Length: 258
Length: 225
Ligand SMILES: Nc1ncnc2c1ncn2[C@@H]1O[C@H](COP(=O)(O)OP(=O)(O)OP(=O)(O)O)[C@@H](O)[C@H]1O
Ligand SMILES: [Mg+2]
Image 1 (tube, each protein chain N blue to C red):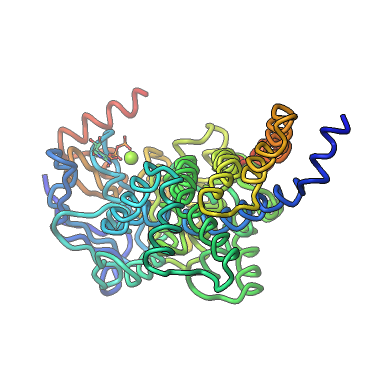
Image 2: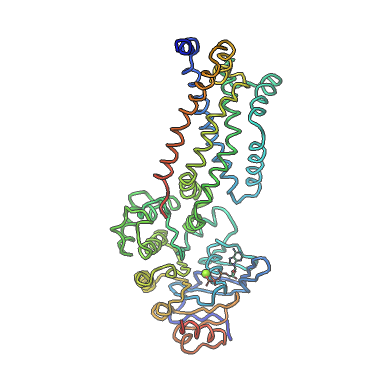
């Protein structure tokens, strides 16, 4: 059982976009992240797998500090994630996040959802933000819905808008926390296809998902977590066909029988 | 009947109610401003702000309005010579407005907070995730949705405020409706019950549209999720 980072198919160029060093987090007595060390290179796509409660969401949320950590360090593009304030907000803008439950701004139109960050955080002029948003919405295939409210869209469409909203900030890395698990089965692929395209275009991505198809097609590396630890990391094919740890074997056997 | 109608020539009842409406208007605006700031403090990540907001609400929600207004007039004005206007009557009016505003701000704060509770946490997380700080996230994402979710409780505060403007009478605002009613009762013992009914009806007529309006607004403005 080894935990040294491996960079799958792609070659890392220079310093990692995301680096976690000895990160620990507790919820009361519960040790949810145990000494996590993880590096994600530019353009790398990492899929995080693991049983429920293993700490995958907490890991994602720690990376843009939606959750605090107790010890250790997190670096985004070489800069240490600060504790609070303006500097944190700025660094957060470099980390795009896509949530399981979409979390589109419910009172704003699709277009406004995508332009809000660029206008209010980056100070982009309105018409420029609008132009850019339309390009992004076109890219994820929902430009024709731009004037609707989120609740008027299907789950798959909402999630694609959420991806566009995150992309509008031109993030250095995108985090996805089970982006398809709240979706009806027939909508899963439209979102996965968008993500696969993104991966092919070279976006650095950390994706929590149980979609093995996505992992096989788009991931450079699979990180397997259990009980707050990174138990195993490998290229997707290697991991799925020949997992080294018993816990990973056990987890995979349960996934397949589902 | 003529007996009763003479009430309206002897006393300018419409003007009296107009005073209550003006008290309501200014107190509503100011309490909305204070209440919004308090609500922001109570949801802010800074513990001392949250504590100050909580203390304000506890103190003013649990103090009788009469005492707050009397404090303004008897302690601040009579004892300490504090004024809000050089004009005698205007000063009492403004003090009553401030008393009403300070008291109702505590309830406005709680109404807005109940509205904040209708906004899923994911909204705030998404706002933070695109790099918005606490205040921009509150202003652009949380409060707009919270106000829409708080229309009914805010309407209830407004209704209470309208009726509570009669407490301004203890603050020497002698031209508002309940003060005029008391004077009328003194001089027109022949029509005591009609006088009560007239003034009660006046308030009912002001309050009912507010209730209808807030019900309609809350439906119209509800955030679809
Ligand atoms: N806010 C919280 N307070 C207390 N415990 C929490 C909190 N959030 C998560 N936990 C606990 O921390 C552990 C890790 O949670 P986390 O959500 O990261 O797991 P996960 O791997 O994402 O699971 P799932 O696959 O179910 O989403 C779980 O045991 C969970 O119950
Ligand atoms: Mg999770």
